[in-house]
Image 1: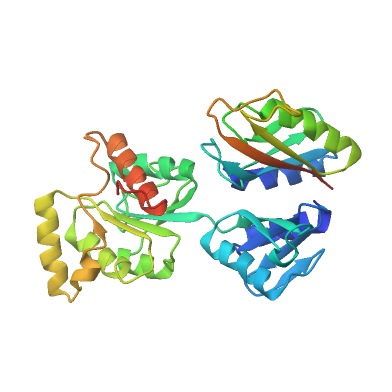
Image 2 (image 1 turned 60 degrees about the horizontal axis):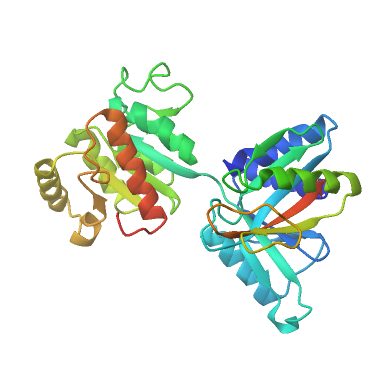
Length: 238
Length: 104
């Protein structure tokens, strides 16, 4: 890997800019493909370029080859570099204290949102990004995209409901909400009164997490992280 | 985890160490690490990341040393049925192709 490629790759990652590193496995030459630009050792035909960008959007590394020259064709390897997945947790509660490190280990950048001053503190959440504004404001500020999961954990309609109103109308790939089946039925009624459609309501994973018989905060965190993983990887279990 | 590897590589290079980067470019059957998984090796034998469940890392380090010396990229294949160059198999029965390159 040439020095300028390494430097540009690191700069893009630091800036949170999606980029694919394309390596010609025959020559070792490399090119960087951004969503709107290309830079490096070789150019790409339009259809190959589009294939690389599609992989970047899907975050799917892999081989692509130039079909027109099949026998001695060029074989390219595409390595996608996207900004980290994000988990936005509403409620700086005990379960959140277990969920934050577990999510970080799984590769998510975690933000915990709680306007109640004594909950979202650095000592309870060392190294975690904390937000003390109201959940709907915080979620709007944080610009939820399709690489974002949102989990509400407060049990408190004052905090959870505004968060869900924003999350359900966002491109978030996962929305989960803590609470028993009964709590969830009441929640659905409240949200419906606020104009949330049935299709939007159906996006909520509740009771949150895979059914693994979780009891302790750490076990519940594990079930939530397992469910988020299953949804992201499109497994049947979610 | 892949997110830390390039930063580590850059750190090693800044200290003047030679570094090789290995990337899983293709897999067949069951394999422990997905396409795109990376590991980096420096000339002192330090290692970060992984390209399998620990089955082939030793062999990759061996190839990485050659790449650090001559600067040439290498493609290596591992699998239970591959007896050409490698005695190293994957216990899981999968096959994996790894690209090793020098980092300038």
